[in-house]
Length: 104
Image (tube, rainbow, N blue to C red; front, top):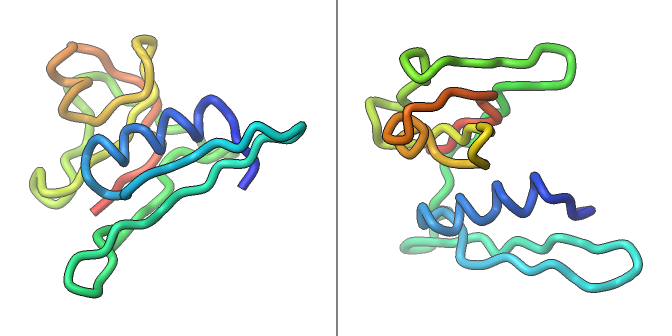
């Protein structure tokens, strides 16, 4: 897929949380982002990925309103003024932002 700073930041969060094995950005004229999915016992680690905020309806949440995914078992990826991070990291930093997606 075409690469962008936001996509690379989301891929970095997914890698740090253990949802993907690795990602690479090609150094061509048009950089491409390649993501290597992670599997456990033959099944994909990512069971569900939902886009929350979309161009027609942005979802901004304060630190108190950040959603917990499946009781804290999954993560929400949030774009804040301190960068792209998980909902847990955003709560710890005391910042809200745009909820990009949820992963379980």
